[in-house]
Image 1 (cartoon, rainbow, N blue to C red):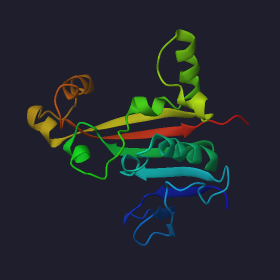
Image 2: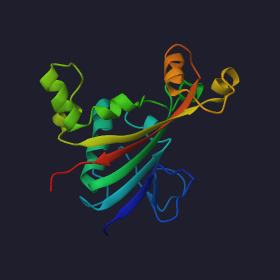
Image 3: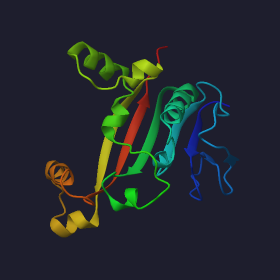
Image 4: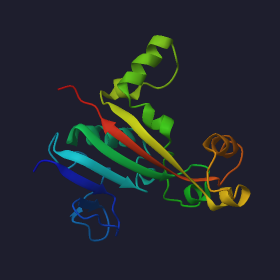
Length: 188
């Protein structure tokens, strides 16, 4: 099989046209995403959806890295990975005891070889995980979803993203979630 689309950690939310995978319930395929290797061939996947899943995985750092190494292995060059996670300063994140991992745009940028090389050249102290793990993902899109608390404070429809980011670094519960898209970069 080639050009597979995976909905990983699907729970009961099945996506048409995707192979819906979860450890629990009745998915198309039962598989523990923290168990390696994953059951797909290298370069066979064109798209991955991880919708409110990644924050539940990889409590141990090496397991978290293993998830990224497996995504890299199974994906083709140019594959898209959609990651939606609760914002780490929102009660949706910290009220759920099964949330074991904070996932942010900067934490995903650590897997970019291009940024890693730039940081090394500039003498920055950022972790160069793309180089260390020999994987390469580019963060292509980041959307933030303001919470209802934000709209109570700022009822206008047009969200001032700069103000939202500034205030969310001071106050909890202003950003509900991140919606991020990674692109897999492989040398041909």
